[in-house]
Image (cartoon, rainbow, N blue to C red; front, side):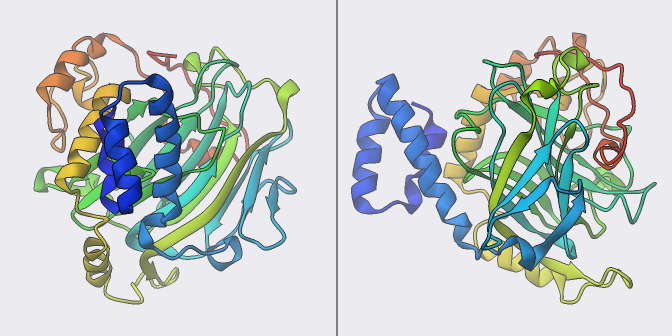
Length: 360
């Protein structure tokens, strides 16, 4: 039984906790599968005890005429990709730090070549010195699971990609799961449901590579045939179109910034403090065990162990002996996916890429 799942008991009721203990001590695969789905649904519904908003309260249509479909109550949104266009939306405000989150369900069946992105960026405001924090979900051929990666850039540091790639412990096409980005002046945390999967702690050695300028929250679906699956060998097959990704229960808990003056409308240190008080920017010991278990089981690439790209690890890397052992050959693999501006290029034709994916 994965301890990162067992660790989710801290917010459970007493009856659920009893069931949890019994399941954590049981090795039955069917019971593990049942509990995995139950735990994911329970933890996600709380939205980390933050208020959710409707689409119209926080977002606007970005691109893809007719490919963004709102539910009648405005709480749910679908993004479509067809042979004519992808689609996307963007937050109505820029934020300097915050917690950005949504429940997402990904397209099913043959999704090779697709990319569904949930990310913060200021590339439209600072095209040469932009900051970015990414979730990127990478489609696959029928019968093989979606995979995803996280990444971040600061001050236009796109030449220093900081990708990590993972599998999931559930099927992201069957039901909604919560994906969240936490960004403060001191750290960045990526969450899947309530499991922290990656933390970046700011250090002086990082300099401008740590994101520091106000960003908007973007969500897009687009054709990434040139790199997303098997290094571009598997293309989007529009026989299966339209490809639909669904979104709901949005959370925008941040420090809003005036888009013209680039001045925060409030003290962003207060936002950092509020996020810390809610337990979002501080990983508990149980959370660290959960994160370690996830990374041991489901992470299959980390730039920190890629000695071909970085003979000297980048300053934020914390090298874990067990991870180093697992990724000892990573330096011999070619890792793909230039991220310099592909989400913004998705509104037109993505540029070519000669990259390869080491594990798909």
